[in-house]
Image 1: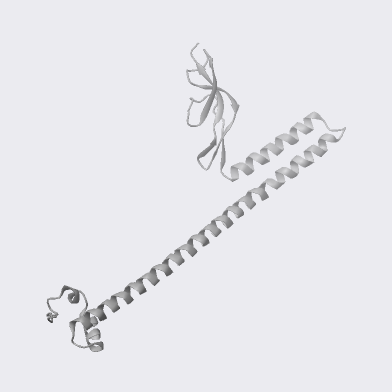
Image 2: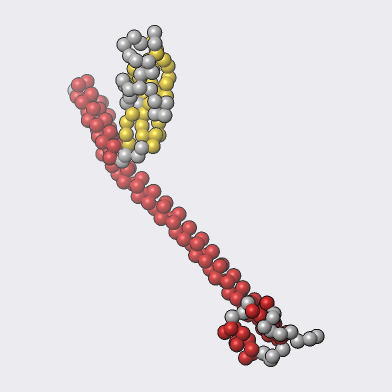
Length: 187
């Protein structure tokens, strides 16, 4: 086997000068020994890269698990705050039911109690971003309204909401239930 000039060997050119010096100190001047040492160094570098990649993969998995746990904690805290805000409404409903059992209770007093409870509930829901959609008199919008029926109406423009059968709701600008409406049409 003939000795090759190391300056012409492309594999040796890929090795940095520092690595070549280190390899040259460890082995003889034989090009095969130099190449074997270079292969060993490349294999060690690949093993180190694989180890680093596996550590990075483990770190990413740990980060993903931590983010899932934090998201779940945040969701629970938000739900706890909402439920905490709803408890006074429930308490009022319970007191209202107890008051309704009293033979001295008047219809007017019970009606007033229900109105106050409704006001409390509406405030709690609004405080948490719930918006009521009550589109009477507005133009029909299929993105926010669900037409249950159409009725001829000479008093309204065509495709105008003339009655709301069930109010709709948006939570933080996202529709969670369309308003169920009656829409006008030409007679």
